[in-house]
Length: 302
Image 1: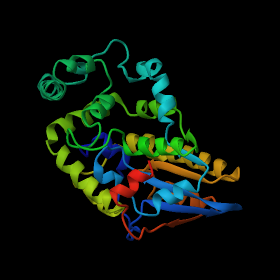
Image 2: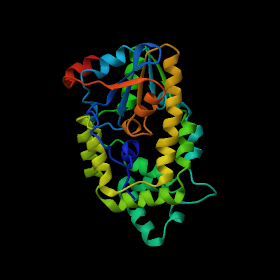
Image 3: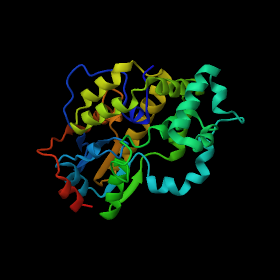
Image 4: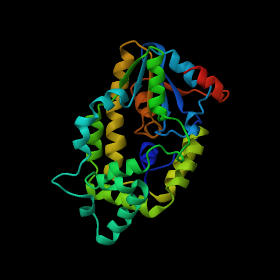
């Protein structure tokens, strides 16, 4: 199994393309009766500055749209999070250590205490997936990067611009997708992440590839450690992509321009959003940027 982080989960895929993928995170969606194009932009859940090196086509394309649609409406999610914590907890009064052999639990326990200190005890009732998500939150060196994750930052820009900001999924739907991954697989993911000791280096390589808008390079990095469980691939990508493409299609057919923000791993492959949109009759084309936005230009847009 591949040693996964939350960032990996947002970008991972089981195979490489047979042909080179255009180096673009921004895709124009047109046709099927739409008067004006909508856009699909692959994001990464990170605060690292490299995630914010927008090509010069991204923010202008976003400004042309009346709706900004992320995977989740993060503001609405925060407002309801207190009532959703139960989804993150292990069932039947289980504890995290119950999922491991003693020698493996010692490794996980030590890693959590090193990462979180006295706060580690608060995680021992949580499902392994969410524990790993907290361990890898941000994908940036401590003390560096932005206050907001990239996807959150872009949605906030939309609010500031007076655009309608919505989510393609509900947080309950995303939690159910995670629950489709057996606890045994989740526990092994966390253990492999702890054992790996390569998480920071792998994240660094992924962020470099993302800054170059190179999906193929991202997948080479992800392929270094093998595959992911079939149940996880189906729950996190195949099933969710089918749900999201239906909602993308519905929004476009209402006649408004939409700027879609989804994790970059949802775009490629035959079960990805680019292919699924094409199969529904849309023309989906990469939008190439001439240059990277200078930081001062980006700040002026905020």
